[in-house]
Image (cartoon, rainbow over all chains, first blue to last red; front, side):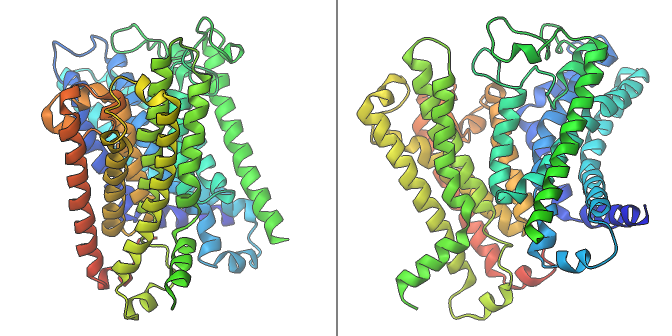
Length: 271
Length: 231
């Protein structure tokens, strides 16, 4: 436990002081305001915004999370392989600290530090909206969306960002990750086989549909469930709250499997 | 050092991402074209050209974002008679040269097999090469400049992938005004105004030149490279 705590604290502090952890999300938000800004402007326009504060902050969650998770994954990609590259891993291995506890501390510490700018951005916009619209309930919904959509999704991304660079260079992971993010979250299942709208959907289609009753800003889109004629429809049952929790659990199980795989690969290489 | 030995060394230092990225991009593009169930050759041709315009430039951009901050003993590089930025330009040339070879091979195959002309906005076999060249140089310039300023391959790579993704997510609103259209990376396959295509490609090339020049100026201040590297 102390190993886990120490590793978590150290990794958190190391990552949260990295300039790029703050600069990259800030630049992306500036670009988002410049390019996709109409969505943000609508949030502060009484004639354009969703009538319901829940829909407004959940839509904001989809945009902020969908966009900033890409940089989140990219920034974390070198964290696990870094110890080997800097040749400190053998020294750490020689200590009595268990590698599993160190990895878990690294995972949660770097993940939490890299998620802070994302949380600041999301709660910043959500608070501004709550004040502007006079809807304090929006903050409660924002907290719920953060817990049910951001946290499982970011834990999923962070696990793969740490583990996959064990088998390929970190930059190649960044390239493939953004391709995956687009393919597995946004691509419509009738264009090609995709994990979008399935239970394994890190953008949180099932929680969005079943826990937040979110169907797009205009109420027309659903982000989970079957599409006639699409492949992999067996992974797309009709959304229910129980399936939303199952989807979250699946993401966490896959994250744990990825971390265990990364750890096993590293242990095998040491032998 | 003989030039051949030197270039062989630089190819190795450039890394696997630069080598594997473009062929993987082509393979994924072809897989997406094969998986496309929509009838008609136009959509398939669009996906194939999309691999050239979207996937290959992304791989090159992230590779160029990873050039700075990987040398284990940059202090030694800085004391050698060859300026470090010359070394970096060589590695960028390796990355872009290999990317161009893969892209031209794919473009050649598409032209010979007739797929090139099946996308109406392909702009012919010669000028049409700007389909991949402009976004490749644009994203590579951005990656190289971000790498020079942030000194962190992670940060620079994250920036390149996010800029690429934001232009995918907001293809429509990114092109609502002229500056957005001129800097849009995917004007061949997702462009809003066909008349802007040439201006868009030239603007991207100009932006790439400015960003690469900026990166070279920043890297020229060698004390920045050893002062608290952003690992």
